[in-house]
Amino acid sequence: MSAPLLQVQDLSVSFAGREVVHGLEFQIQPGEKLALVGESGSGKTVTALSLLGLAQGASVRGQALFAQAQGRVDLLQLPPRQLQALRGQDVAMIFQEPMTALNPVFTIGEQIAEVLQLKRGFGPAESAQVAIQLIADTGIAEPQRRARAYPHQLSGGQRQRAMIAMALACNPQLLLADEPTTALDVTVRQQILDLLTQLQQSRGMAVLLITHDLNLVRRFADRMAVMEDGHIVEQGTVEAVFAAPRHPYTRRLLDSRPVRDVVLPQANAPAALTARGVQVSYPVPQPGLRGWFRSGAFVAVAGADLDLPCGQTLGVVGESGSGKSTLALAVLGLLRFTGSLEVMGQRWGTADDRALRQRVQVVFQDPFGSLSPRLTVEAVVGEGLLVHEPALDAGARRARVLAALAEVGLAESQFPGLLQRYPHQFSGGQRQRIAIARALIVQPRLLVLDEPTSALDVSMGQQILQLLQRLQREHGLAYLLITHDVAVIRAMAHQVVVMQAGQIVESGPVEQVFEQPRQEYTRILLAAAE
Image (cartoon, rainbow, N blue to C red):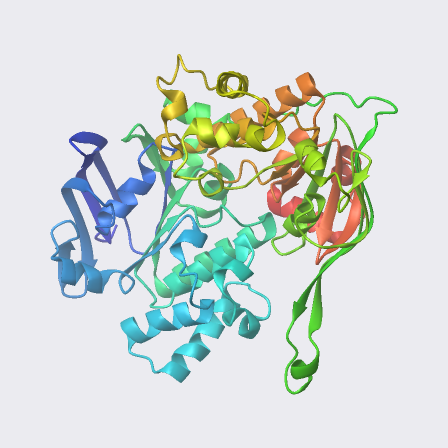
């Protein structure tokens, strides 16, 4: 075995005197793919950030010996200027949340070109062309047009791919990938894995993959290290650990898969959602002189038909950019659309829209981004009552907030001072429970679930799915479940529609569509999820 590219010895990380990572020991060979696996809060991301001096406020001890052409250097002892020169050039990082990592006031192409100019000395014209090629290499369609787009104009998966293009711009020796495929659908996820594998093999690039996605680990990594509470509890080849896990925590992770537990559909249940011919279009500028006089149109959703009875779950699955989230926004009355769309028998745009907004609520993909960091838990969860039940006094409102939190598994006895805490003081799974409580407190009939578990690790995701299944049984809720995770659809949905390029290409009962798919696109999605 050759000398390791990175050798980490006795790595410990502390915040305000509290140690959160304890004496880690691992190494990565040139061209090797090592996965660091564990639940949220296990210390995976802090470990990666500390290697590059990016863990703000952290006290770091130990060694991280990195092999360069001129010899081995200790990343933890490098002066700030030398470490800054090494970041992005020799060691690059893909961050977990692209919306916060990308600059909202610069286009994607400008941000990638900036890396090329600063690190590789390219001129403006050359860096712009190379940026477009990198965008194309990561699987983004229409790379020239997307290079001119701002982060908010891209889907979550497209933003993540743009971040990958930025990280790969300088051909690093080591890539630290923190949940690089969390926001991606199954087919694009495989494309990104194939791309990273190709780059790793052709350039000898090593990858430290930080993830809670065990299917991703099985497909991508050579070796894996399992973290629990800041300790590495098990290491070995992927085949050996999956075949015969030694530690109880590893066995629990491997057993954390979505389990189907749905209510039996009731005959003649009233319709929670009915849509016929729903179409959503966005204006886009036309090239040349034509753009001065009229704009074109991009059809994001074309002629969608949906039927969702009360007490059931309708799953919407498809790749990033297929129109899933746009369809969800139309259902929520947040986008203009043509066609017919009724929620609980009522159309948007009537005089009683406020009452309708009480009947339909939403749980977003990223619980940290959807909860205001300046509001306490009491204010976040109780905000809907101020709008929809203003007659409630403060005492009654607080009682409703406590009841909603208890219903999603957050009790004040378990979390002292629960109502006065802020979202950042909770884990990802707990924040998602707070988001669900915020939606439930106004007693809706329809919940739009936009990727409710994609930002969570496997065990937390399983807990959230079990919670949603229980709430549906107890309250007769209807769910419009938007996801790219086929396993979540299998566990939760009664009916499913498959979307591609804004169109519904297949629909029907989950068992029928997934066991006997009629469309080649559906078969590709299912194959990529296995």
